Length: 468
Image 1 (cartoon, rainbow, N blue to C red):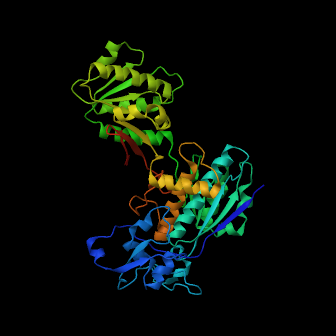
Image 2: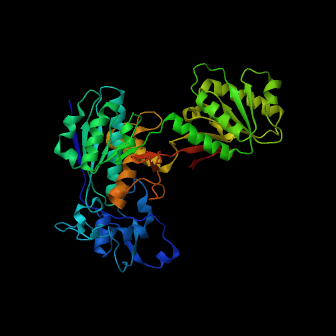
Image 3: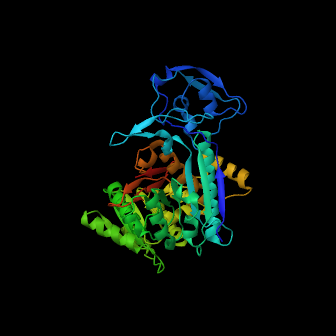
């Protein structure tokens, strides 16, 4: 059975800025305002004759995900700008409609009310939202993150009207698409199952709706449908990207590949591709074995160049043995410079191997990074408990955080750029909680996420993310 969920927010629209307040901007501050109970960003800006954009430019902390206006806060109040930019005028006053206009290629003027930038964004979620199996529970948590993103955007004055349909694996997606609310969406997130793609792809193409495919499904429609955003990257695509950045970052290193004798390993395509690329570039590489004697193991390492170690398995057990052998090697040869290069699975092993990650300057390639020590993450987790009376599932990545990042990224992009938003790098400065996004056009079809990063555990016990 298909169930429909609805979630609506107040109809207030905002344009926003992302730059910090410069010295020149500071000179335009005319005073300060102490927030009173129940005041809103829209109300304060309206009272001072400002656009919401102008108020946020003077108070850039408002762009922080999860920001909430609270009683007692002190805000900078700037002088109004001489002219408002398109999309920066307040659009939420009761009984009024914006009349700003844009001109199309034929010189015809379009009513601003028809532009997604000047009204509530209509979001559709078409995922299995149930408690029957793991798919439903994971997607329900993801959807909760989407709703939290809508609440966070509401604090910035952005209105989102959400319709959610429970599209289980055996449901007929055409029944959902027959709902008139589906055709009115500006953005749809889904589906989870490949067999629902044909109908959904044709639907969004017909109605000019943007479709975000959040997880790993087969979607050949991406090659022809320009309305599709696919977040997932295949293992082969990820391997190619990681190899490109490995050879760039470790060009002058001596690479040691350790055969860990794991017959179940699926890392062969990566290590084979990496070795082939290094051979083409005449880079130093040698292969040793986890069962080698201490003497033969030591011969694999260079005493004059920094060494980077790559295992051919992602399992924790073999990683532990490798660290034991390397620790023994370093005890006898302290002059050796050793860096570890791992796999996304290693992010699961921090409880066991964190100290060695830092000791050996470890790099882990990933498309996400869940940092439980981040103040933004901790704030999100507290709000999740308050809203849903429980913790997120202990998975990597965290599904609620993924839903938050996806929804915040696309909704904010649509609000700022309208339907010209293509998710390209640098379109705006959203700092993700866990999952960065960057899209590129896939031939003449849709847009594909190309984000990867190295999670870097530095020896001084600092963890950083290096995005590329």
